Length: 363
Length: 101
Image 1 (cartoon, each protein chain N blue to C red):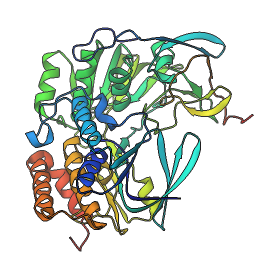
Image 2 (cartoon, rainbow over the protein chains, first blue to last red):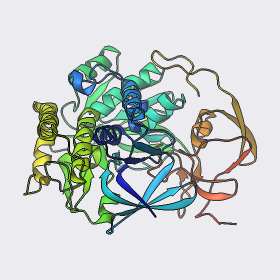
Image 3 (tube, rainbow over the protein chains, first blue to last red):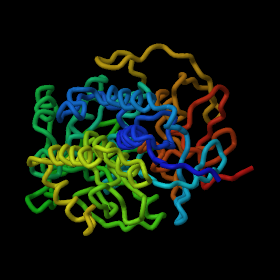
Image 4 (tube, chains in turn yellow, orange):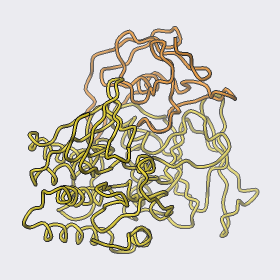
């Protein structure tokens, strides 16, 4: 078994950012990702980000990934990277088990940052398992990474930012977005994204949901139904739409499984997408020296994942003896950046959720 | 269907990779996963569910959800949405839980 100072699980925005700040302190990092390349979901995001300059606003997601990866590469003497490797075990004696090229490897760590991100939620409706019904991330992956169209006539379900942005990306790729369904009375995401779609002639149907999918071997029709103010389906409002694909964008839930295996205290917080770890102000879980960063700690935007990564990278390194002279100042700066990102009406849900998982002993 | 024209992304011509799916010859391109190559060929049903034999396609495309399991080069339960396509692969729809030979 090999000993490593800091192991980071997940090379998405949070993991890359954490590796970078940790390595800046002199700490040696092993960064593990199950994909063939680093960058997480950013590598398929063609849209420009919001926020401030510090979090790469106005930059396309895939270019943010490139920047974060090149930052990490500048510290190649202190950051070791293993791709195509899945962390399948986390044990109480500070050991992780890694599956790589059909072999298992065990590593002991002094500190661990779990940045596994989030997975897509599913929606319950008849025949929701038909091929041609995908998560919004899958649609982005197929189109923007592999250059393959998910279908030619699609209905999007969910009007959060992901649903809105992916609808726009579908149109860019030449797909006909026949309708965008939203069960709530109001559009969930930013108005600027929704207006863009409206200008392109996309029907955004609020208080409407998908009731069933129809098809043999692949979806070729869906039935929608309108909902009343108490979210109950209104009989007689059913409509059929011909499609060859349906995109489900009803949110993400944190990939907490590794934390559960390690015994970290978790809590169900719907505002954060599902099961999330209890953490202190430095993103340390209830297990000593195990930290989290990014969506696994609560589903947010990539910009907050990056800042959380920078913060937890510094905090984890400091915890095992690599404390910089300006440590307190840097941590305070990152905490302030996170606070700014979560301010305003769109951050209200996140703020409420995070309150529920703060450990009592804030460091 | 593949994307050829895109306002932001470039999809240059890539090396063709040949493979077999359920006994029929198909081709994908370098950089494809098994599932992306099949979807580019218009094949969306990858396998059948274990008990009720319902059609299964890919759902998450990032190796999370297990909906895309197929038998590849006689090995069952391969996550085809994240497994790179390679020349001469024998890809089969998986019926049932799969048998290790």
